[in-house]
Image 1 (cartoon, rainbow, N blue to C red):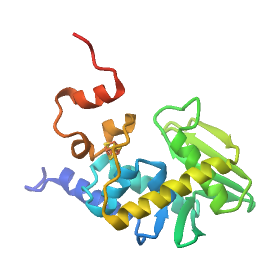
Image 2 (tube, rainbow, N blue to C red; image 1 turned 135 degrees about the vertical axis):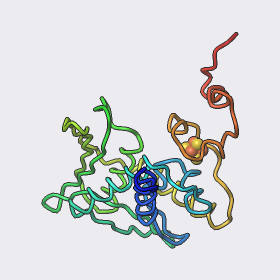
Image 3 (cartoon, rainbow, N blue to C red; image 1 turned 60 degrees about the horizontal axis):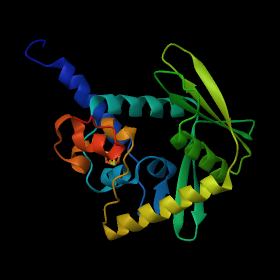
Length: 211
Ligand code: SF4
């Protein structure tokens, strides 16, 4: 507090406001790959009845968006009948190589499936044969993974985009997609209700302790 003003809260509120303005803004026939490589239910809530981002989410949104701007990230549209799929690439090198950057706290041994789906979809949307995911930490460690183009993976993305678009039009909430991401999701309570010690999710994963 300084002079009666809570500057900590003021800074948090400002960053949350900036992050809100960075949200995706497409009509119901337009789906960004980001919305279908994460939980569809989360993407549905974000469009239909969003909760305000927590400070940490807001900060990572701003960071990711700033990085894309610095690297001249590009968004492109891929049309399939009346459906438009959008993808944003962080960097295109020599007009042939796609590179997406993912900030992490620890360098992974393998690419995360959602990042694989995302970069693979970018290779189709941008019609490129080479794609890389680069994971990097705040300390400057990094690792890159070369992604093999997969038609099957892209078809999965298209199918999920069609389903999400349909559910948005019909105002039907997608089913719960249990994963470890639920633990840090801002819609946890909406999906699983008030649980003591996350009992429901532990049941879902079959990892509840037996008495
Ligand atoms: S809690 Fe899990 S199922 Fe629910 S919206 Fe979040 S990620 Fe999806």
